[in-house]
Length: 210
Image (cartoon, rainbow, N blue to C red; front, side, top):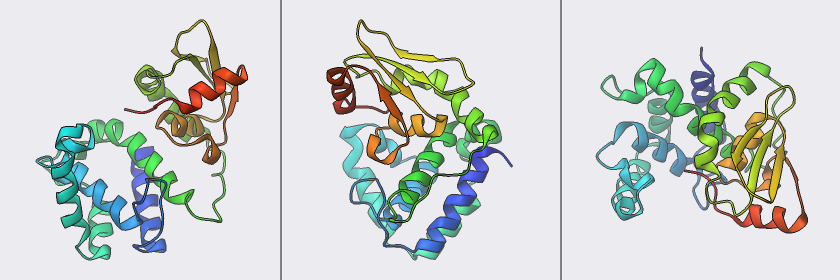
């Protein structure tokens, strides 16, 4: 299995274990809301535009609420089975690339919203799989930072995500840096942010993500 397939399977199992009403790190979304979001994203292209385009958000929210009203077990099973044959997100190479960050970040959104969460065991294969696409996505994820941003993970070449006269350096495992890149708080990510205090504060306050 690929890392993306592993993340889908593990997230589906976690949805099953926790049930529909547990918190996530996605605002006020529960586990039910999150699995509905994932299904809209890969099965309802007619309504998924609002995920990235604010002007279309109302329709996306309406369709997601309709999907979320279905039986929770049915939703989780549908997510576990993957997208329909006609969806590009179901094509092996396309789906693996398009879904890797999505599934990893949302898996951690569920895990880390629980009171007893623990860091994952070290997995070099998993970390390398996240670091490679991060090189391509870093400039987009950190484009709003008011200071330069360097990403550093032991044993890997630094990624200059944003250049600047002043800068901060994010130090940690690839998965932890990915969470920061997708807008999660440093409070729930095991990352050290090095730099002058004012620069660190400005970076933390900045918008991050797609």
